[in-house]
Length: 119
Image (cartoon, rainbow, N blue to C red; front, side, top):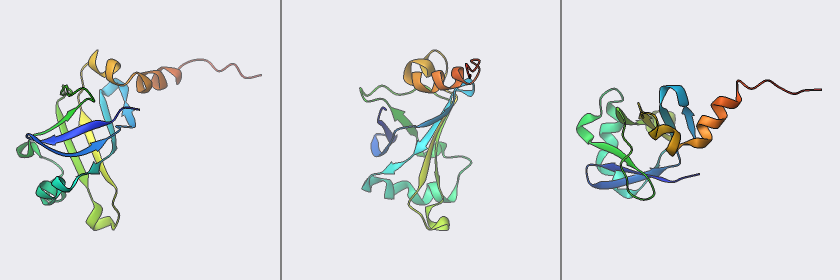
């Protein structure tokens, strides 16, 4: 599984594998693994889950290409929930980009509709 870099402007703030997805919607999400630089935006992520556009969040592939999308958000409920789990969401990734970046998610979605061959 790929490791994606998360940026706030030009500052690398963490990573995610984007291990889950809704392929038809072009949405991928996963555990956000913050770096120490995340502290500079953490309070904004905790305070505002609905509009984080001022943080200039972007996600890049392992080769440094920015993933085209409608938006990126960090859902940080770590303080309220008393856990270190923070979620990264990447919304509105267009096709064919989504299929190229996440073939495993597309395959998993398509497999849901294949007839079972049970005995």
